Image (cartoon, rainbow, N blue to C red; front, side):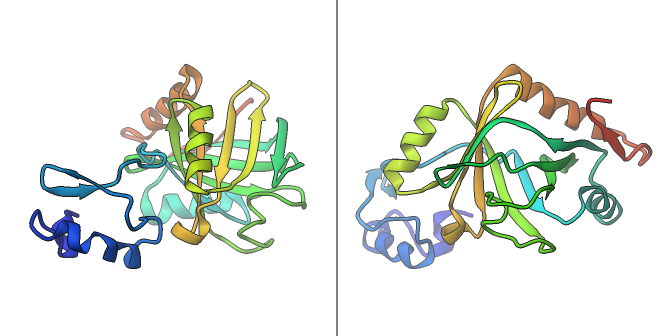
Length: 217
């Protein structure tokens, strides 16, 4: 949607910019600069495309079957009881063992995750056992260090940091109050991009067979 959809134009943008903070809490009044007659943010936190939408579910396989039936998403690559090299949640060590099913849903990846062992986690921050709903969207960033610095400058807490057994670091940014869900970030790498491409290619001309494809088997 253009700025005009919110009543902004080149002529009145500066006067009305502060009013946007009433619609969008993450826009700070006064944090603006002029560009080609319009008002824009001087800096934008995590200005990267959304590449994944993730839901917390009770059962990853059943959720994948439902998403395939209702929306044609899939096929799904199932990674069960994902072990981490290390994990930190709200400042305390916690590996939040979980299972995830990854499939393609239109132009984005869909992740359906379930927590396998009880304990504090970025998932339990939002959902109790048995509850389901959107948990995060994901972005591939150029630098984790820079992304952490951007989040700190914007006042966003890193709910959890972790590293996979393959050495890939990822984190959950707590944007629940602003967006209703978290943002997951991980750094661009050949391995990560290759995984995204594998899931995408599997969805092209998929005939609905072999819905669940277990990884590591």
